[in-house]
Image 1 (tube, rainbow, N blue to C red):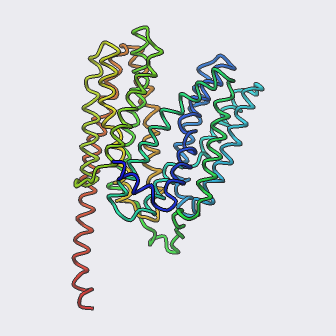
Image 2: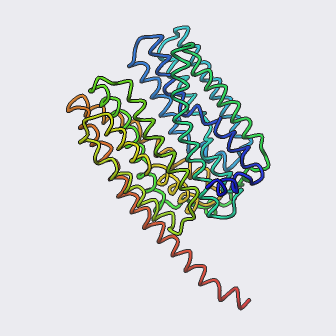
Image 3: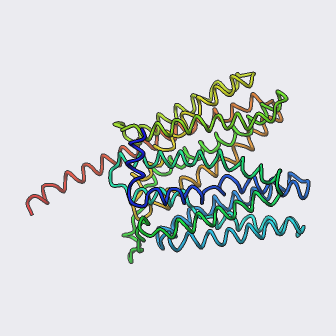
Length: 412
């Protein structure tokens, strides 16, 4: 297993840009929670804190695709630093507006600007791997490594921002997010040797590579369903722990879930897969949906932790297959944009899933709210099977086109 990862990370520049990307991604898991902690502490209003955080999340989801398109067009070296600087300045102004009580409107505006300008580091790093790694089996390992880094980000970031905001200063968590995001992104953008080439627009728009929407759209729907599953499990687990008078353990339960995903992600990267990405994606999502079915029936912290740990094992393999499938079906000239669309779909699903689970908690109870991730999971399964079928049809069409061109090439 170590040899497999060492082979990928020893490629020229690979370790450097991956570490930079890890640091640059920390704000993704810190800013939303940091906003809630800061605003609720300074104003005493969780409603306002939720509104400001929502403005950040929605802007980030809405503008990620645009940023991905700009990155493909103008290059990471230009787009990433600009986004990081604007986002850092806007976040600084957000902190200033809350500390000086400039009103809810200014906080919402600055939060929106922060999210809109936040660079698409995850997509950019994966685009570098695609550019750097010619061997598809090694690319699977690279995507697995990045999935593990994502889990590290989402295990480390919330803990760090909470500790800093509560034990040091309410501004300390977001201040750290500013520093890590800016430093990591600038370091990533400065590494020209592994940067994918810019793709000039075609003079004739008809010749511009088109996004394969018959395959991509169900992938986006599946991604949104996975986001809904993530958001609803988080809310349901907090409510479940609180119902047992152990709210503080909710973080441990969710960390156990993430740890299961981290372990499976490491293992996935060490395997040489003979099954294609589309098949792995649909069966991985089926495993993820099936693994959360027991959650509504549990009544103790220990069995809940055990089931969440096992369910976590389905997360990374599914997301790794999704990213690999995206790389496979999206034209190279629009790869960052395509990956950003997938990430946007997932982000767009988190808030509705969390909100729906919250409604079920208030009306029926904590255990019943786990039916929301179950339903979300199986909606995703349906979309994943449609996406896999479309990807297989696309691959078959390419094969027929290649076979048809072979006789002409031979005769010439």
